[in-house]
Amino acid sequence: MALALSLLHTTAACESAAVPEPSPAPAPALRSTVSECEPGPSPLRTAHDSEARALTHIGHYPFSPSDGLLALDLLSASQRCFAAAGQPLDAARVAERLARWQRTLDTDYRGHQVRLQHALRTQRTADALAESRALLAMLATRDGAYTAWLRHIEQAEP
Image (cartoon, rainbow, N blue to C red; front, side, top):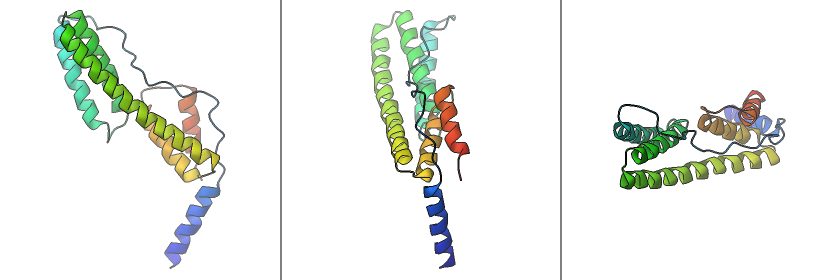
């Protein structure tokens, strides 16, 4: 009984603590930073290697959210390298996989953002902390004003 009352008190304290204001900076778009096939001895080999590595990162994504953006970059590199190697069918196949992966990441990302904004509006500090951590995990390879704001939420933990 004492443990239950303690947990209730702790939860109530977490939920009523001050929550930071909404972000002054817009959330960055989750887009690939790859603009061309990296020069190398064989664009075709690079394309196959990048695609295989991307699939590995996609498999790790549920356990390591930062792998989502890495997979996005690798799929983009693969698509561009297949095109550079004169393989339009493979380039189109990877472009479709890239588009599907982009939609998956965008859906997950937007869900975390909506839940974070709701937690901030309703002063649910524990929920805001959980969502800010999820977003920071997704954006581990990116830095900027939005990620700084997310880190501020994490530091504001009661």
